[in-house]
Image (cartoon, rainbow, N blue to C red; front, side, top):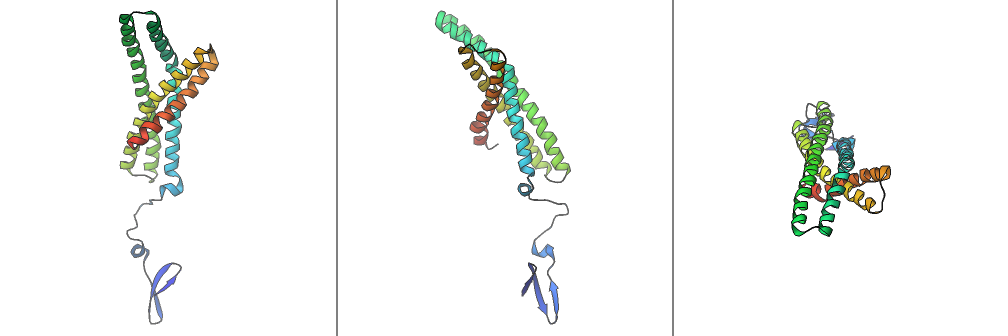
Length: 199
């Protein structure tokens, strides 16, 4: 048995018989199924997903930072100046406000992330780089990540805005900081939650 160009051969007298590639490498699929990591396809889909998560966090930070600041300040004032009943009422009312903002961010995050993922993964399926099952799984995971990014964006943007408000910083600098805080919040939330859930 001799090896010619990495292909096994067998000698029968004076003739050389090459082993067909299908026997050497098992079943060769009719469509091209490439190593996604080598071509960067998985990396591209992951990059799109990551950028989308940062965007969702930034949007949530921008949209809900003042809601967060207002509710937190109101609750703080009730703790400082109000009776026990006032504190309970403030907690209830501001909890509803923050809960509503967070639920909105969750919904928007899931829709945006799921939509972007659907487009990206559909392109991969149509180009034969991904199976339909993988695409559906990716869209589901990205939708969940988007929901988590929404929560992280509200918290990150809100806490950033709250900190700057304490230093009497407002206007455009506060808005920019809340957007950045939202993006960072989404990254932290995904690091803490998504990876533990295996997303």
